[in-house]
Length: 246
Length: 302
Image (cartoon, rainbow over all chains, first blue to last red; front, side, top):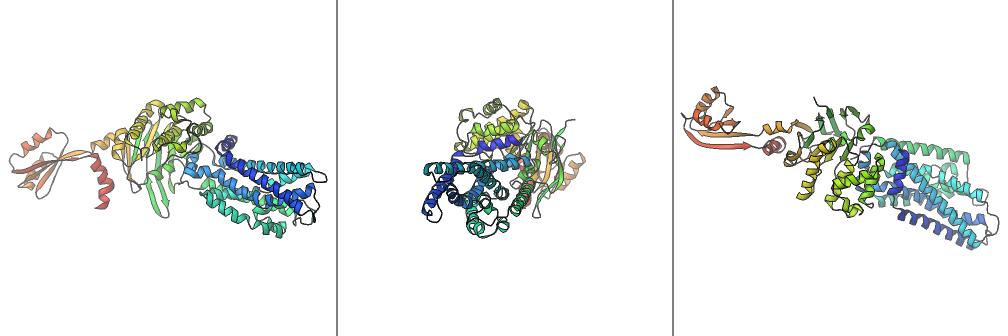
């Protein structure tokens, strides 16, 4: 049943919008990465890892957390439009399964986004051929960690998105919340910033050991991420199960 | 003895201290077409939403197919088809794809989609996006979704609201066929007596959140009566003499009013009144519409 509901989400979504968003993220960040690497080459000598850091910043600070909000709103949008929630709730499906299916679907789309971002990075690197070695395994790990780090935000957004019916309003709120990320993620140590779920993927994806690396404490960071994921998911699910569908 | 498909006990729903449904006891026998009748805002939709588990009752209990709602929500909903308020769809998908979504939730084969498209006569439009459908087509697609799994119970909230006469007729015919087609019990809400009168076997009348009447439709029909209003010179004397012979009679200072059960009674009445000076005779019919208005509308305004 859960898997069935998960499959249904694939049928409902408008893939054209989604593919556009994912390609936008990939192309912008790959180009910015290449550009910044070139313009900063006097301070930071070009390399595969320098290209990664330059591409990553805008992706992890802005696009990726913003996309969590957009994708979550989009996944709930079809139910808000025309009040299809009501119709779904009249079907013999478990509310928990429906909620979990949506959560799984959102994380799947985010995994695709992340994968495409890295493919974009590899292709850019292959074109400009920066000096140095490419450590693929490392980047796979960064990709997975950056994806996992967005789960608390997914849980939070799913809680919020079931309430906000208007897609435009939801988008606006997200942009406003993502903007302070530049300050929070780059200015605060991870054990404070981790409470602000928009900032998590930046910490998880940024390689340690460089001059500009964020102040990262893995144990605190991942504990907070884990705890907030469970907390937001639980609150959202409980609200979802008990609410009235007018 | 027929089983009740739906039974509620003192069902209440309260929002911010306002009781929109107040101790409703619904009983719907198997195979019935139950017309749930009441003016707008009477609490019909709220009641239906509680039956479907969309709203939580503030008190009271619901049993559907003998099982408790919402405790056994999923197994109950498996046997129910419903259309509440306006139908809701994924507008960017075709009618067929919308039905496909529901078919896969119920685990039904594609043939079920084609069957139900035929029943609501949407087969020619199955591949168009739903956002380009007319209102009547959307309504029929909504009914198709409600019917796709051949439910034991169908709950429709004002299904003909906003349709043109041809559309109304189409849906009415469809609903009438259902009990024989799938052995479905139907619960249909409406604010129009004429609507319910044409299809319902049972009726519940709700007003201000309270159930005013509930029984077989024929019982309601019996309430419609004719009265003979006779102006007399001395109505009280006529009243006394008529009362002795057992007529259902009321009196005021100018006239007596006698209930007629059959038209043939008129001659007998005139026979009894031959010794009195009759000034005028009027016949007044109290129709179902009058009864309904008496119960729900006019009373409140007076």
